[in-house]
Image 1 (cartoon, helix red, strand yellow):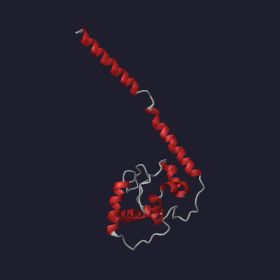
Image 2 (cartoon, rainbow, N blue to C red):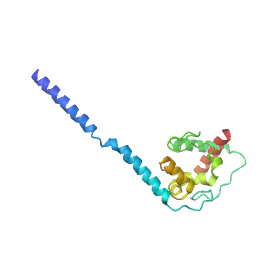
Image 3 (cartoon, rainbow, N blue to C red):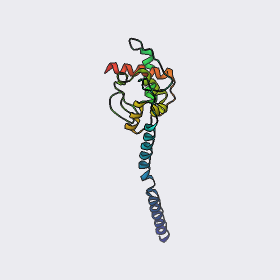
Image 4 (cartoon, rainbow, N blue to C red):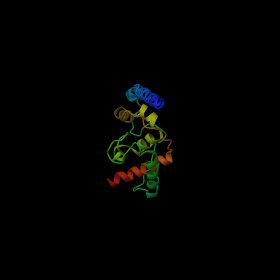
Length: 166
C-alpha cells in the first residue's frame, strides 16, 4: 500500500515536471519571431532596386503566345499542376489564403508576368515592383515549386480558363 502511494506520487511529480517543461515559453515566442523575420525579409526585398517595369516581370519568360481560345488539354494539365503545387496557398476566387486569390489575375497581369512569378518567385519579389508590393502586403515569400516554363504555361492556361468562367 505504501509502495503504491510512493509510485503514484512519483508519477504525479514526473507528469508535473513534464507539463512545466512543455510550457517553458520558448515556443510561445516562435510565432512572433517568425512574423518579425517575415517582415524583415519583406522590407529587405522592398528596398532592392526595382527592375525596369514593362509589366512582364523578371525572369526567363519574355514572350508568351496565347491562342484565341483556351486550349482545354493544356488547361486540364495546368489544373492538375495547380492542385498539386499551388492550391495550398492560392484560391481561384478573390479570397486570400496564404497568398492572394487568383480570380482575374490574367486580366490584371501580362501572361509573361504570371509565368515569371511561377518559375522565378524569389527574384520577382526582389526586383519586380508589383511582386515586391504583393510580398509587402502578404508578408510571405512565394515558395519556389520548381515549376518549369512548360508547366507554368499550362498553369497560365488553367488560370485563363478560370478567369473566363467567372
